[in-house]
Image (cartoon, rainbow, N blue to C red):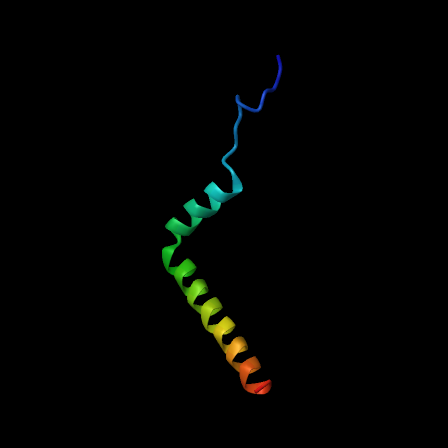
Length: 51
């Protein structure tokens, strides 16, 4: 009769993201490395330009 949230609880966004990250481990790792390298490049570039 009533649709309470506990009857049809959907997984949270964080839980879905973690599950997706575990299933697609190589892609997630590649994106993490690319993001880290890009951020370091920006920071080193800014440090060089503003020295």
